[in-house]
Amino acid sequence: MHLFEAFVVVHVIAGTLGLVAFWVPIAARKGGKAHRKWGRYACYGFMVAGALAIAMALLSLYGSEQRIPTITDRELFAGLFGWMMLYLGFLTIGFADYGLATVKHGRERERLRAPRYQIVMLAVVASGLWCGYFGLRVGHPLMVLVAIVGLVAMALQQVFVWREKVGRLDYVGEHFRALIGMGISAYTAFLSVGLIRMIPEHVFNPMIWAGPSMVGVGLIIYFTIQTKPKMRAAT
Image 1: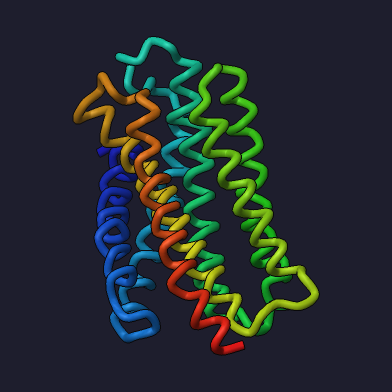
Image 2 (image 1 turned 45 degrees about the vertical axis):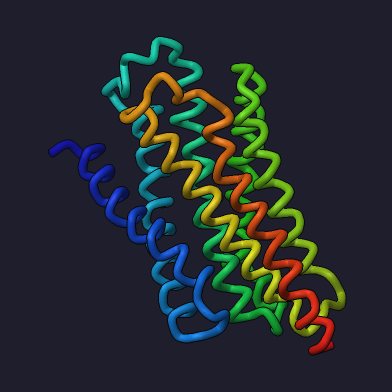
């Protein structure tokens, strides 16, 4: 088995764990045992899948073999299956890492200012800027859109980390927004890989790729509305 195929196998296993486990903490009682346990499973599964997505993106860009030769526009292929997949890998890891960190250090935000966390967010920003630039170069708005989403998310995270004062429970909102963002980036990456095999004629259809973002934004709005009364009561 070649290295790329081995990465694909492990990536699929880890990604499947994350894709399935992701919905348990959403449905379970917040803060309960199932929420914490399956939330960790989802994060670790997506982080492994994200790391392997980065490796596969680099192999697609710089490896000796031509991936998916049926796609004749190789620059567009490099954009969507190289640079955007690289960025989505970093974005998934960044969201998962921050989501776990806000629970652990949400009331000690100075911990989130350490290089350990800042370097991860910087990697997301750098890969997102390149993804957006490359999207403009090849004329594909999807790459620009996903780059903007990640850059805005990282900016909001930095506002929470460096703001002088925050509410006692503000970290809760940061936690679920980050982990729903993790799900959005992971499902977007999943569709981009799966579509080329299942329905290749729609692999560049932006409406299909936008599905995870639409569902994720809806969940963020729903949970924001649900938690605001509790936060006001606690304050």
